[in-house]
Every structure is written in structure tokens, then in C-alpha cells.
Length: 481
Image (tube, rainbow, N blue to C red; front, side, top):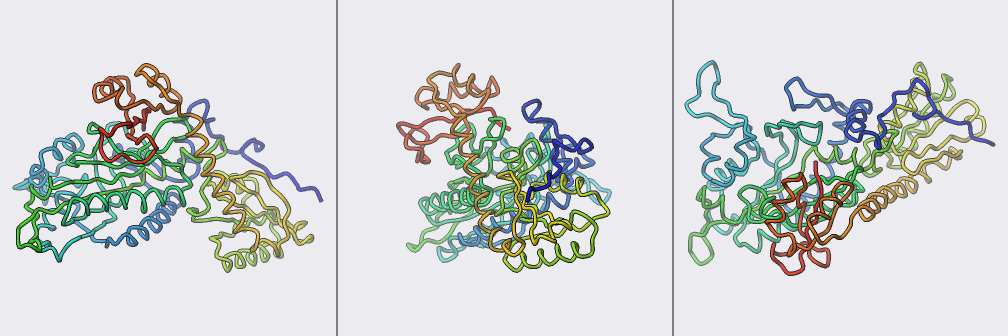
């Protein structure tokens, strides 16, 4: 039996139209954020209101990342939003790096404060104030803490999810007895928490690497990063893990009594990921018809839609929804038949729900439903009784497809170059790889003058290098958000 055509953004004259990505990628991004009901701009410049569907993506992100953080041994805690300004001045490089972004409170309760307080841009300083109290001996180590919170960094060029004055994140802070233990833990978070989540849940091809001195976190001795290529070829830093050495320990006198009976400074790490990942999800997987959400992340993996108002159809879509829930699929039933079917179909397409199951009176008579795949595309009639068995396989196929498409984009738009001029040219459409021995810090500064940055360094074999000056290091160069 031929399948009835279903409306799409392209075929419905009255449907909201996204600016094509090829015409204006930033405008397309903003259109999609608005029309998929992910977020709105907040009342203060640079802030955002995350709408329920957008927040559901963040909740799923939290669940997945939090489980991996706990598997790595860290426990959740919470530290205050307001930090005495004097705390930040204790670590010179740290305060210098964050000074332009700070929001400072000088009055409270109608009076001028004796000491100004800073709205946290990050929590290394206040965490260390308490680590110094909690750590007494080697038996207290390692101390592994994470918090889910909001931070404020005054942003001059805001963009929803990507760069906002206030954003949500998790930040981990740890203290260790040895440099090696701290180094290995930072690498474990980088690999087993962030890279694993991004590749296996977000379906994002990410490049692990080491930041240069110019790009690393203020106050760190090493920063590990994960860089992703967006749909327009630009790079986005997705998560970072920092080795802090003993810089903060010395500033806050965070010591422990060693097994040998000596007072030693702890070695520390910090690491974080933010709501920026939602923006990356849009820019990496979205298309001209809207968002495409990886099935393993999707808060709604399948939506069952009643095409027309009919009691028997409405009852059947609810029954199908119950069956799919019992099969472990996150499902929503859409029986709002007072809203035109075409309008609802377009809304679900914009939101990027991986699978839509359409059911009308004729489908019900035939014992079938129409399976519409948002990621792979296409639609086909499927026996209703086969849906519970079929959908898990379809969702996994589409998960793998998104990752493959992401990987193909990065591979296809990355070129090897041998000069700064070639690197700048390549960065207009993608990424460039140039030997670090050719570029070096001076070349990095010249690139920065043209709006191009070294996203990270990778070893000759593609792994994360142990040092910046390791022979064979390659600089990954791009324009970035």
C-alpha cells in the first residue's frame, strides 16, 4: 500500500522557515534556538532563559555526566555563589585571567560592604579555602569533589548557550598526594567522563588534545581539551580538564602530613563542562529542518502522533505509547488533534525527536503505523505489533549515523599545511594541521592577530602529548566560537 506523503518544513507553506545554514549560519542557529523552543534571551544582556525542552536536554546531559563523574570516584557538594574578592587575589595568574569577566557586588542590605564579593566565575579559590581545612593527612587524600552550579562571567559578545554571562555547569575539584596521581586523574576525567559522554551519548566526533600555554586555564600547569567541529567548520571547546599543580595549594596553604611525617602541599585538578554542549548539539547535528537529537541523549526518543481526531485512533496511540515505555523507550503521545497534524509534525521535526510514529484511521484499519526517521530520513509503514522490537534497533542505527556524519565532516574539512598563510586560508572553511615546531608561540600570536587560534596540540600519532614541546607535536588551528 503506498504511503501518504507527510508534511515537512519544505512542503508546508505556512510552516516556520529556518534561515538556510549555507546562507547565514549564525542566523540559522538563532532561528533554531527560538523555533525549537530551546531558550530565550534573558532580561539582562548576555543572560538566557532555558525553556522546558532545552532544559530537558540539559537534564539528560546532567544525568549521563553525573553518573560518569561518580564512577570516577567524585562526590557532589555545593559551595557559595558569592566569593570574597580577596580570595581571588591570592593566586595572581588566576585573578589576572578572570579580572575582565568578574561581576563584583559592592552593596548589600542597603549598605556598602566592608569587602566586595565576586559572583563566582569558577570556584578554585573558595574550594581551596575549605580544602585547606578538610585536608590534614595523607589519609584524607585523594579528595574528589564535584558541584553542579551556575557561574557568571561578564560576556561582551553573548550568544545563547555558547557564550552567556550566566551559564550552568559542573565543576570538579580534587586534591592528591602526588603530581602523578593528580595528572592521571585529570586525564581520566578527560577520557572516561567527557570524551566517553560526547562520543557515545552526544554522538560527537571530538578531538582530544593539550592546550598551549597561551590557551590554557589561568592558574593551571596543563589544560586538556576536547574540540568539536561545528557545521560551519569552526571549532568549539566542549570540555576541559586542568592540572593545577601546587599553585592554589601554595596560595591557600593546602597541606597534608605525609606518611613520612612531613608537611607537603597537595597537587590539584579542576575540570568542567557547561550548557555550551547544548549549543554544540545544535550546531553539529542540526540541519535546515531543525535539530537532530542523538537517541541516547533524547528526552523524547519517539513521539506517537494521532493524525486525526478519532476515539479509536487516540486510544491506539496511547496503547502504543504504553508498549514502547514498557520496552524502555522514552516516548511521548501526541493526541492533540485540535491542532492540525501538519503543524505538530513540523514542531517535532524542529525539536529533532529521533522517531515519529504517525497513526490515522486508515493505518489503524491496516494494523500499521507510519515510522518517520528524523536522523536517517525517510518513512515507511510498519506493523504496529513490530514497533517495540524494531525501534531499539532503529535508534541505535541513527545514533551511529550521527557520529559517523560528525567524523566525516571533521575528516573532510581538515587539511595539513606548512605555513601560517596556508593555516589562515584553511581556517576559513575548516581546520588546519601544522607542525608545532614550524608554528611555535610566535606563530600562534601571529594567527591570533587574524582571529585564528591554536585549538590544541596533538602528538604525531594523534594522542594527547605529555608536554608542549614533545617532538612531533601538531597544532590544530581553526577559527572558534
